[in-house]
Amino acid sequence: MSPRGDWLHCIAEDRKLYCFNSSTGELEQTLELHEKEAMGLAHHPHQNLLASFGTDAGAGKLNFWKP
Image (cartoon, rainbow, N blue to C red):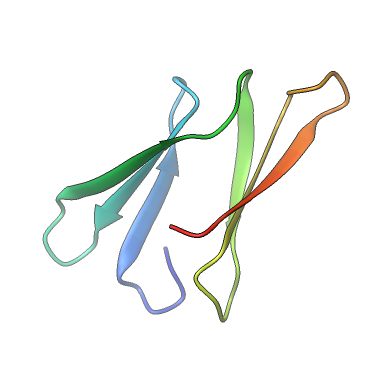
């Protein structure tokens, strides 16, 4: 969940980020996160910023997103 509870962010096996509006339950946005397996997701506690990590580039990769 986003810090204010407005959005629910999910990572799927297809390596995409799904952003749902928590009030309506509707899918609002999708983003391609990684070229290989997406392992996890974290939301900044005070800003509209997400971090995802996955198995890209051999040792792993950390991406930052502004949804």
